[in-house]
Length: 397
Ligand SMILES: Cc1cc2nc3c(=O)[nH]c(=O)nc-3n(C[C@H](O)[C@H](O)[C@H](O)COP(=O)(O)O)c2cc1C
Image (cartoon, rainbow, N blue to C red; front, side):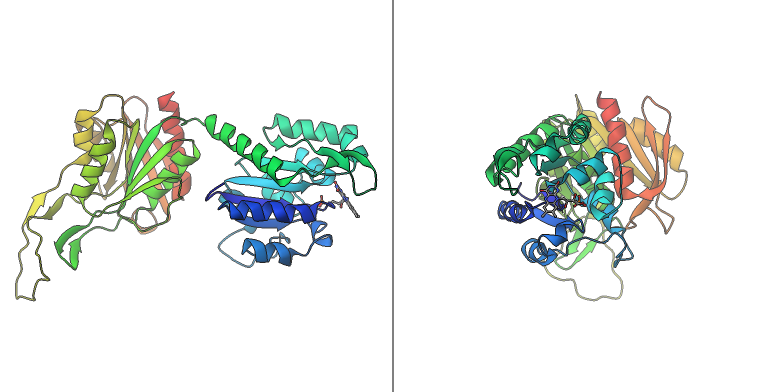
């Protein structure tokens, strides 16, 4: 559970009070939890309890869109590594089975592609009703995990099946489910190295030569590769965040990047060179801050061409390079593909303001050594990363 992003959905059953302990346990284990409640759930426990304990505002109303940058229910669905519905009422289970989206919880869950884990709790007759049983079966067939409720004393005053299980039992089942989920991901067992950002080539202790690359594309690729099950190492210049499950190596210069890539290379299956590596570095790095002078000449030396070097060394490794150009994009990309012995070159036009370097968006064409080029129209970098990883998965198959 450590560092896992958990969307915690609470629906209106008497067991809501027990889901508070469950959520606290997730937080104790290091998960980042955001809660959404159905209006019925708020009849049982105040959202304030969940807000204080999770340290996030609780989502209830689909239409209280306070941040114009996001549609909240979609944002929560996309943010989550896993979604937990606890307790899950017969009503919400029925809605999910039938694809309904009539409140925040059901709307977010319908938009969720990451794993969904449900903890039903209800009266025994509600649980055993053929409609509920059919709905649970539908969700299980859809690869959602639906826990089996426990038998014991129910709120109605008699014993029966339908109780919310103990926290430990839920956590054990959830961990098993998440492990199995990652086991079955397409890049399971693959080691992927992604480089990101524009390298910094030192002139003196306070100055460097760099470029406009932000590292956003590389970080999005590392995230997409991790989501597809890979063991990911991110060699980055950027200070953008990355999830804790990604092995991050922070570097500055092209020489350091070469060192880190070279050291990892024999062991890995895929290298994605999304970094904008400076072609040159100052021949000499001044020990002290340089003083102002009328004219200054800095002599530059050529940096190692990391992609080309790895292209020479490659045995089993799949190589993806990037070509950031402002003209003759196709010609340069095709040249790079053969000269660097790469399997894919992702080419983009960095001469336009609304895409490429530093932007959240990009439009790319992917050139391959065996297939026709594929163009991905202007989209978010996260979506482009997803498409590149999908092409990678197809190629590795
Ligand atoms: C006191 C009380 C306890 C309830 N307990 C449950 C329950 O444990 N499980 C359940 O499925 N429904 C239970 N319900 C019924 C749900 O609250 C009702 O079906 C509601 O529409 C669920 O809405 P939701 O799925 O949007 O949260 C209970 C209702 C009341 C008044």
